[in-house]
Image (cartoon, rainbow, N blue to C red):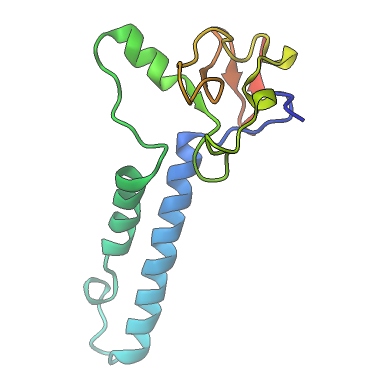
Length: 146
Protein backbone atom coordinates (compact mmCIF):
# COMPACT_ATOMS: atom_id res chain seq x y z
CA UNK A 1 0.00 0.00 0.00
CA UNK A 2 2.95 2.34 0.63
CA UNK A 3 4.91 1.26 -2.45
CA UNK A 4 6.59 4.29 -4.05
CA UNK A 5 6.16 2.83 -7.51
CA UNK A 6 2.40 3.32 -7.13
CA UNK A 7 2.49 6.77 -5.57
CA UNK A 8 1.95 9.75 -7.83
CA UNK A 9 3.47 13.12 -7.01
CA UNK A 10 1.60 16.35 -7.50
CA UNK A 11 4.32 18.71 -8.67
CA UNK A 12 4.42 22.47 -8.23
CA UNK A 13 3.46 23.01 -11.85
CA UNK A 14 0.36 20.84 -11.48
CA UNK A 15 -0.75 22.63 -8.31
CA UNK A 16 -0.33 26.07 -9.87
CA UNK A 17 -2.06 24.87 -13.05
CA UNK A 18 -5.08 23.83 -10.96
CA UNK A 19 -5.19 27.25 -9.29
CA UNK A 20 -4.98 29.03 -12.64
CA UNK A 21 -7.80 26.80 -13.92
CA UNK A 22 -9.95 27.84 -10.93
CA UNK A 23 -9.18 31.52 -11.58
CA UNK A 24 -9.92 31.19 -15.30
CA UNK A 25 -13.28 29.53 -14.62
CA UNK A 26 -14.19 32.39 -12.25
CA UNK A 27 -13.13 34.90 -14.91
CA UNK A 28 -15.17 33.03 -17.54
CA UNK A 29 -18.24 33.25 -15.32
CA UNK A 30 -17.76 37.03 -14.93
CA UNK A 31 -17.28 37.48 -18.71
CA UNK A 32 -20.44 35.46 -19.48
CA UNK A 33 -22.39 37.51 -16.96
CA UNK A 34 -21.15 40.79 -18.43
CA UNK A 35 -21.93 39.65 -21.98
CA UNK A 36 -25.57 39.08 -21.06
CA UNK A 37 -25.99 42.42 -19.27
CA UNK A 38 -24.10 44.83 -21.56
CA UNK A 39 -25.17 46.26 -24.89
CA UNK A 40 -23.72 44.44 -27.92
CA UNK A 41 -22.38 47.63 -29.57
CA UNK A 42 -20.70 48.85 -26.37
CA UNK A 43 -18.81 45.60 -25.64
CA UNK A 44 -15.01 45.78 -25.85
CA UNK A 45 -12.45 43.30 -24.52
CA UNK A 46 -11.38 45.84 -21.89
CA UNK A 47 -14.89 46.04 -20.47
CA UNK A 48 -15.45 42.28 -20.49
CA UNK A 49 -12.22 40.82 -19.16
CA UNK A 50 -11.08 41.35 -15.60
CA UNK A 51 -7.95 39.45 -14.54
CA UNK A 52 -8.52 39.90 -10.81
CA UNK A 53 -10.02 36.40 -10.27
CA UNK A 54 -6.94 34.74 -11.81
CA UNK A 55 -4.54 36.90 -9.79
CA UNK A 56 -6.56 36.24 -6.63
CA UNK A 57 -6.43 32.46 -7.17
CA UNK A 58 -2.65 32.52 -7.61
CA UNK A 59 -2.18 34.76 -4.56
CA UNK A 60 -4.44 32.46 -2.57
CA UNK A 61 -2.22 29.47 -3.43
CA UNK A 62 1.05 31.18 -2.52
CA UNK A 63 -0.40 32.90 0.54
CA UNK A 64 -2.51 30.25 2.23
CA UNK A 65 -1.48 26.81 0.92
CA UNK A 66 0.19 24.40 3.33
CA UNK A 67 2.62 23.46 0.55
CA UNK A 68 3.84 27.01 -0.17
CA UNK A 69 7.02 28.05 1.68
CA UNK A 70 9.78 30.60 1.37
CA UNK A 71 12.80 28.90 -0.18
CA UNK A 72 15.74 28.27 2.10
CA UNK A 73 18.54 30.37 0.56
CA UNK A 74 21.24 30.13 3.23
CA UNK A 75 23.58 28.46 0.75
CA UNK A 76 23.23 26.75 -2.65
CA UNK A 77 23.03 23.27 -1.11
CA UNK A 78 20.16 24.16 1.21
CA UNK A 79 18.29 25.73 -1.71
CA UNK A 80 18.79 22.57 -3.79
CA UNK A 81 17.53 20.25 -1.05
CA UNK A 82 14.54 22.53 -0.49
CA UNK A 83 13.62 22.24 -4.19
CA UNK A 84 13.85 18.42 -4.06
CA UNK A 85 11.68 18.06 -0.95
CA UNK A 86 8.73 15.65 -0.90
CA UNK A 87 5.76 16.07 1.43
CA UNK A 88 2.98 13.65 2.31
CA UNK A 89 1.13 16.48 4.05
CA UNK A 90 -1.23 19.05 2.59
CA UNK A 91 -4.47 18.89 0.62
CA UNK A 92 -5.14 15.37 -0.64
CA UNK A 93 -2.44 13.98 1.64
CA UNK A 94 -2.04 12.91 5.24
CA UNK A 95 -2.18 14.88 8.45
CA UNK A 96 0.41 14.61 11.22
CA UNK A 97 -2.18 13.17 13.59
CA UNK A 98 -3.57 10.53 11.20
CA UNK A 99 -0.21 9.22 9.97
CA UNK A 100 0.75 5.96 11.63
CA UNK A 101 4.14 4.33 12.04
CA UNK A 102 3.80 2.22 8.88
CA UNK A 103 3.53 5.34 6.72
CA UNK A 104 6.53 6.97 8.41
CA UNK A 105 8.80 3.91 8.21
CA UNK A 106 11.37 3.33 5.48
CA UNK A 107 9.88 1.02 2.84
CA UNK A 108 12.04 -1.10 0.48
CA UNK A 109 10.50 0.75 -2.49
CA UNK A 110 12.13 3.98 -1.25
CA UNK A 111 15.48 2.63 -2.46
CA UNK A 112 16.80 4.95 -5.16
CA UNK A 113 13.71 7.15 -4.98
CA UNK A 114 13.72 8.82 -1.57
CA UNK A 115 16.59 9.50 0.81
CA UNK A 116 16.02 7.44 3.98
CA UNK A 117 18.22 9.70 6.10
CA UNK A 118 17.11 13.22 5.25
CA UNK A 119 13.85 13.67 7.14
CA UNK A 120 13.08 16.19 9.89
CA UNK A 121 12.89 15.25 13.54
CA UNK A 122 9.73 15.76 15.52
CA UNK A 123 6.11 15.39 14.38
CA UNK A 124 7.02 15.47 10.66
CA UNK A 125 9.42 12.54 10.79
CA UNK A 126 8.87 10.26 7.80
CA UNK A 127 6.22 12.54 6.28
CA UNK A 128 8.67 14.97 4.70
CA UNK A 129 11.65 13.66 2.77
CA UNK A 130 13.90 14.37 -0.20
CA UNK A 131 14.40 12.82 -3.60
CA UNK A 132 17.48 10.63 -3.96
CA UNK A 133 20.43 11.90 -5.98
CA UNK A 134 19.58 10.30 -9.33
CA UNK A 135 15.81 10.04 -8.88
CA UNK A 136 13.58 12.03 -11.19
CA UNK A 137 9.87 12.63 -11.63
CA UNK A 138 8.46 11.46 -14.98
CA UNK A 139 5.73 13.42 -16.85
CA UNK A 140 3.03 11.27 -15.23
CA UNK A 141 4.16 12.17 -11.69
CA UNK A 142 5.85 8.89 -10.75
CA UNK A 143 9.36 8.77 -9.30
CA UNK A 144 11.82 6.97 -11.58
CA UNK A 145 15.13 5.57 -10.48
CA UNK A 146 18.02 4.61 -12.81
